[in-house]
Image 1 (cartoon, one colour):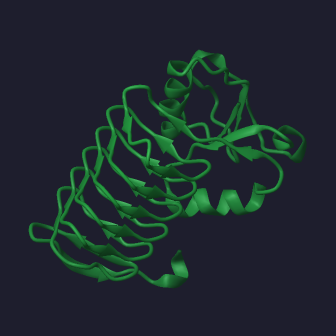
Image 2 (cartoon, rainbow, N blue to C red; image 1 turned 60 degrees about the vertical axis):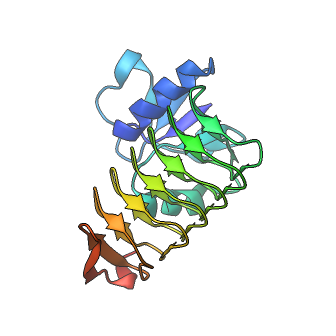
Length: 204
C-alpha cells in the first residue's frame, strides 16, 4: 500500500495502517517534505510509482483530494481503511478510498461515498447519506437521515439535527449547531448556525 500525501493527514493514516497490520511501502507527494517519520521514502508521484498500486489519498483538503483522484483514477486501486476501534454497522455502505478513524460510530443503513474522511470519535446516525469527498471532523455528531453533499466539510465538534441537508462544498464551523438546511458553498457558524458567507463556486 502507498499513500498519496506526506504531511499531517498522512501521518494519521500511516498510524492507522500500522494498527491494521498492513505494510506501507512508500509515499508520494507533489512537494515531498525533507523527512517523514520512521524514514519512510517519499517520492514525486509518477505513473510508474502509482501503476497497479493500492493507494489511499492522504490529504485532508476535500478539493485537493478530489483533484488528485481525478488525476490518478485508472492508474491504481483505491483502498478503504477503518480503525479496529470504530463501530461500523454491517448495513453501512462504504465507498472506495474512504478512511474511518478511531472511535467512530456509524449506525445502520448509512451510505458513505468515495474518498471521505470520517474523523476521530465522530458519530453518524442511521440512514445518513455522505456523498463523495466529504470530511467529517473529530467529535462531530450527525443525527439520523442527514444528507451531506459532495465536498462538504463538517467542523470539529459540530452537531447537526435529523433530516437536514448540507449542500455541496458547504463548510460547517467548529462547534456549530445546525438546525436547518445549509445551501451549496455556504459557510455557517454558531449556535444556532447562521450563514456568514457564500464561497465562490468557481474556487472549488
